[in-house]
Image 1 (cartoon, rainbow, N blue to C red):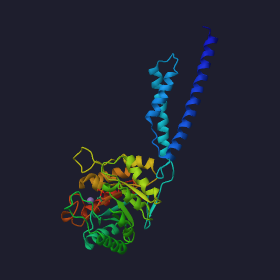
Image 2: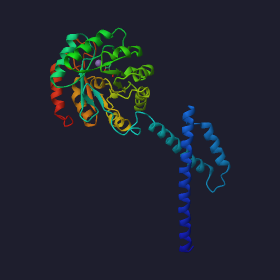
Image 3: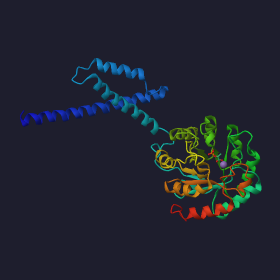
Length: 358
Ligand code: PEP
Ligand code: MN
């Protein structure tokens, strides 16, 4: 074979490559159009019967030299890539997606800008127990120049015999303390019908881990004009977490803070396993601020500080931790809350972190 012939054949192969390239991309566009039609009809994207029909048709027309199995393998890859493209389009379409909105969402909580660059720190007791108890923590929060206070009035407890919270009385205490100390308060709401009531008392509606997929609660929180702190479910994947936020935003409320609070794994050394890599993933995939709850993720006082530092280092917009004036007698989570002295030490240390700007 002359060099000239070889050159010509190589040229031909290059042209064929480009033809295949053009065809698979044209096919991809058609698949995307199909995805959009299916989306409006609410039909599942993957249709195995249809795929089988297409593969049969291809094999019936295969005149070689490729074996049927090779052709099947190649087309299966093309089908798979098409399906992934449809799924990617779907993800891009989510309202919470970074691809939908590239700028960071910033949430204004009585002047504290969550997600604006400098970390927001949230402290407070696990449960609201009395005015004095909440006020003692609020005074310590205020003395540090901090703005955000937490406290549970409705407590979703594992056992029905454990302290269930003070309910509306607890919300009233939070409001009184928040007004007296000029703080913004975050408190969990567990029932859709309590969302309206909560609007008068708190600055942020917390949706707890156990309710991350309580879709009626998510929709109710999405229908009001009040920031929401959404915690990751005990065994929720990041995709499920993002979709839970989408439930809220799809109702019109875009003021959402995501909170990683540890997930259930086989590890027993900590109460839950802090999924630290969830933070940059959530920051990449969504435009929402992301916080890390170091108390419920670790369940250990000795791990609060290193985990808080890790959270800030990896890009979290804030950290939440529980503080109680006398943890030994706390009505919930007594083993893991900091007392006021430990709180001072924690705060002094975390302030040394290069991630906290003065
Ligand atoms: C809480 O923050 O009070 C709480 C109950 O946390 P979680 O829902 O993450 O368990
Ligand atoms: Mn707690």
